[in-house]
Every structure is written in structure tokens, then in C-alpha cells.
Amino acid sequence: MDNLSVHTTPPSSEPEMSDRSGFEPELGGELRQNAVFVDETVCIGCGHCAHTASSTFFLEENYGRARVIAQDGDEEDLVQEAIDTCPVDCIAWVNYNDLNKLEEARKHQIIQNLGIIGDGSALRRAINLKT
Image 1 (cartoon, rainbow, N blue to C red):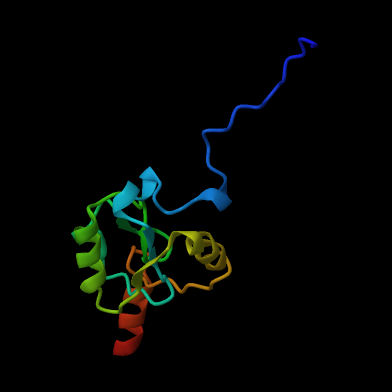
Image 2 (tube, rainbow, N blue to C red):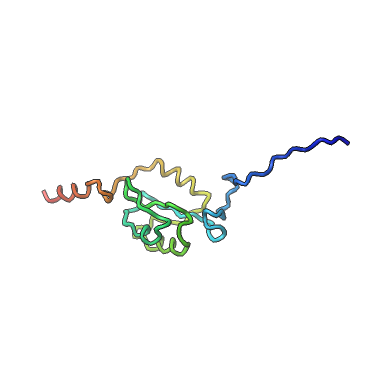
């Protein structure tokens, strides 16, 4: 019998995207299978979600819309409170496997600036209404 050694490649510790289950630590492990997503085209930039769950949501600077900064930023019940109290219902739990598709679709959306972050558009509109 020959003493040939068999070479095998050790399995990678990094999961392939197709191997993702939604139970990964960045999604809260076993507690959270879904990801939270903000539909920025519907968001009015009120900031309530960012105030309620500040480690999960923030107001994006360019358009004044809410966005998720960390999927595991806050406890699930706090994120749910932000979802339940959103005045325009633009935040939802989505299947983790759909999150990449939603993020990719976001790249092609046209989002109007709300004039909240100080670009002067709200002031210009108010002045134009008085004239």
C-alpha cells in the first residue's frame, strides 16, 4: 500500500451567501431571523425611529430619510416599537435573504430631498408662499 497523503482543503469559517440562514450573529443569532428595512421612498424623515432605537436607525444626511445602520443595534422589542410607531409605516421586518435584493433596488430609486438637513429648500418654499 502506497503512503500517499490525501490533501483536503479545510472548510472555510466564512459562510457563503447562499448558506446564510438569518441566524447569524449580526442578525441577533437565534433571536432574529429577519432583517429590518426602511423604504426610503415612503419615509418622511420624522426621526422617531432613530430616537426610539438609536443604535439601529439614523437619518441619512443627503435626503433626510431613515436608514438602518446596524441590524443588531437594539433589542428586537425596541426595533418593533420603532416599526409600530412609524407614522407612515415605512419600516418592516424582511426575510434576511431578501435584504440584498432590496438594498440593490434602492440604488436605482430616485429619492427627493426633504429639506430637513439644512439645505435651505424648506425656507425657500416658505418664503415663496408668502410672496
